[in-house]
Amino acid sequence: MTKGTLFLIPVPLAENAAQKSFTAFLGDTINSLSVYIVENEKTARKFLKEAGITIPQSDLTVHDYGKHKRNDSMVPYFKELMTGKDVGLMSEAGCPGIADPGADVILEAHKRGIKVVPLVGPSSILLALMASGFNGQSFTFNGYLPIDKVERGKRIKELEQLAKAKKQTQIFIETPFRNNHLFEDILKNTTAQTQLCVACNLTSEDEFVKTMSVGQWKQERIDLHKKPTIFLIYA
Image (cartoon, rainbow, N blue to C red):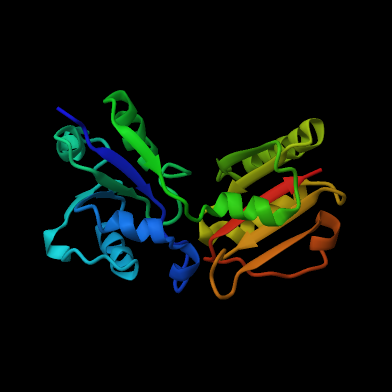
């Protein structure tokens, strides 16, 4: 039996950013699908409406892959794919599989011999790297740093040394309500010459991207509380 295709469908990063994120092919794709695997059903349905889906929402099958479902069997998510039906995979925001639990679904699709097709769309990590002016030939996304203040400081110093030794851009994030604490810890645990880029609320109306030395950042006051932010350091 022919298997379906898993389409990886990027979702806008911010409110009112839909037109910056959609492509004609994305619109065509979502209007060819009636089955989705999503991280959050409510926001996924909202996105589909904004993207111009013409299929009645009541006719859609939406498999919720939220955080309380991820230890369950993968079998239900692949019912339609294994019987030849195409399915769309969506993250809460940005690109499926990039700093996103959808990677588990994608890996399982490969194991089952299912074709995986990534669609063009916004990734906050790559947008931040593009806008930073840092090395785009060699970079590492480190995810979240330790919550413990001592361990976090130690890890920041390690990343700074890696940036210097390998001439490699070091990228990391934090839960938005802890952004200001992380920003202060970066300033305390790096040298004045180290370059720091802060990329905040990407694609939104109040998008903020700025690169300066740590020494210069110490003269600047910013509030990143509850604002999705990417931090990048380079030396």
